[in-house]
Image (cartoon, rainbow, N blue to C red; front, side, top):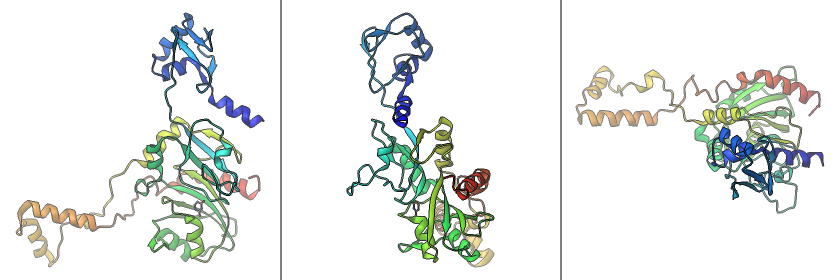
Length: 328
Ligand code: URA
């Protein structure tokens, strides 16, 4: 009951904001319209700009003209509990994450969390944003807490970092760290792909069973004070930063790899430089071909991922404490 009430409250918006968001006029002008008695809410004149209205239910009119709410994009952070499926409808009738949200707007999960995995699940009706978050090209990292059935060995950490063969192709680089003082059985792992049951399968391939898996961050957006089953709107700052993380970065090349082909030693290099076999165009084509074949691997990774575990280490410590204290 309490949760239903708070969901209702979350839908409310200030009357002046509703009018300006609908494109009628700027916020200040909306205040004037309201003060001067030109605005009604459900047929009643309202003169207080801060009056809360529900855009889905209340009928707001300015000078007798109905104000149509602009279809707004909605961005939600849900603490998905275990025992829920990440889908809009489950054939087997199991509870779905949609049951927890209760907004009238149709929202879609950004990626999936398994039935047994809990943690951060982002939902939105903004398809472009969803795509930005999920497409591997954008390298948006997700961080998981994983509890294993036995201590992890250093060579396996290395394998996880470098890529594990799943479905016939290697996974992209992962960031992995052992959580201190937990018998080497608990790790943080950050990945930017979203293959089916990816973290579990990566670890299973190396002979570990995952006893607990919790996503603690997606695009650096965490749960904050949410409890399992609760949700909140993403803040503007989170949205801005998530978009920034997903903005493609220029690839970083090692200097030596962008030098012209030097087959045949200095002579060979000169040949390419002089462009004997076809002039400038050929030279440019060769260079582009060489670049295309060069793996985008460097000690310097784009900032969206390389420091992800470092930058949130304090939060991770807090979460580790909570998880190990069984407060979650
Ligand atoms: N990897 C998994 O194995 N499961 C999830 O739910 C998410 C990532």
